[in-house]
Length: 425
Image (tube, rainbow, N blue to C red):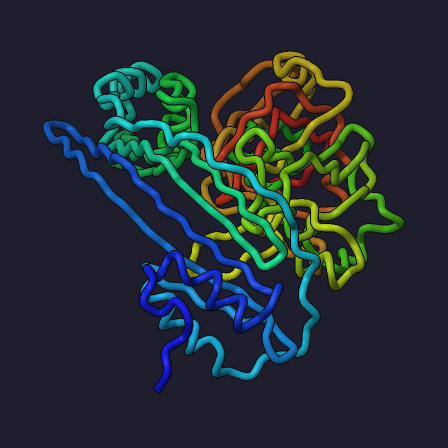
């Protein structure tokens, strides 16, 4: 048996040559290294851990179709290439590969996250008047290094830092209790007071005495609720065939625009295509979609820079990266509240948002506050809004300008949103 040229070289150095011999000009090599400090704290306990992850992936076009292999080291990937070449694949032409070279900036140094458990615990107790207790806080600070090469000459790299976490709290009232978990991606360190309010609303409001919501009325959505609803709508923007209920491109009221712009987070996507802002909905009308290299090739379009890798273990696919509502005429959130004559303010979800795009249906279970004549009248421990997505989006009457982002798992952002009419039960 003869050795391939370069077989004795370090695996990470000889992989591009090995892929070029398999699929001249039609290959891609991805590598990722992540390092993070994680601080987990609860009353009387704290533990700090350091983690490191390495991932390698290759994609190439051979014998008429795409092939993929992934492994946790360069040496293991070299062996996985053989397995990836054995299976039959469907015919598909290769994409138009991007070509450019960008050197990675220096990776930022990372330190363990700050000890914020005691501060957040005090804020939670104060915000809930002692009815909610923080029981666990996990904070993670990390850096990620990525590099993408391909057979067309692309060689791009980046290094970025991130801070995220999960807070767990328990609300108690009478003989009842409720535990909630809130995930967040935020500034470093995260803002304490908004996080405390989210925990308290989610944990304590559902423990209120049962109160029947109105059968219908105006609906004011907290940014966290609006972002979850937007995440449920996201497949509309990556589908090659939008749902039939989007008649003549009309998706929402003229107050609503939706964009995706991850250029502030990363200069390129998981395929090396430059990041850019994409206006998906322009004053209510569907204006564009999100494409990776493969869906762009199939539809005769150019990639929008939305080839996303949820993990190095799977090929990139077309997905949102930083999706958010916006409007050309924002109004203060307090003004939206004052304009509610009779309705509900949805402050926190009590179940995942359910969206059926094919059937044009949605269902949102939430806890919140009854609002009459612009003033809060009492807590509503549980309510449900349901109906047609198309009607809901066309009933949006105003949005504020305070867009907040939440992990959905991609970043989804929303301001306070006012819906002129919704059905509740």
